[in-house]
Image 1: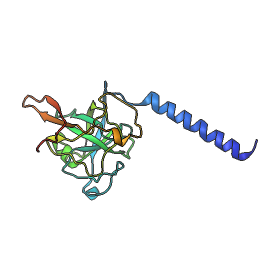
Image 2 (image 1 turned 45 degrees about the vertical axis):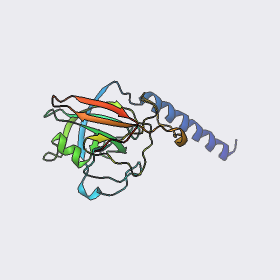
Image 3 (image 1 turned 180 degrees about the vertical axis):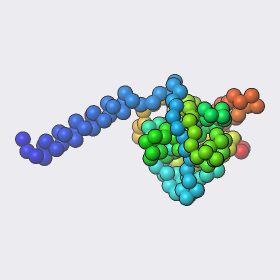
Length: 189
């Protein structure tokens, strides 16, 4: 066999192996995962994230290694019980000892500012489809989400002509619970 053919065969095997590993290790939305969280430094303000969006300290976003872009996570600080909801729009954290990097606003909600890190648990609210427009933002009380399918899916290349734009409104109730509503029209912030 030629060297070229062996290299192609090796690459195909590696691709299939990694696809199978990703398929079986893909996070699901029915479990709670625990680990350590940190937050972005101020120097990243305005820089592009892995999704193409710019990092904004006042939005509630996060970096996770495997969840598809657009995934909404409920993050709970296990030390003080504080909770917030973040949307995955970046890959990371780069430190292997950490599970999640959150934006500055989310870190304030969780009480991470003083300590820098804390043990957290994360639970999936809605699995993203891997697609985030560059200009989409997330305000304090309203999370704009492009939802075609509400069930957990592996990341795919979206068919942009078939996207149905829905807006998800996530409101934190006085008792600490979270209320989620869907609308086809953009809500007023």
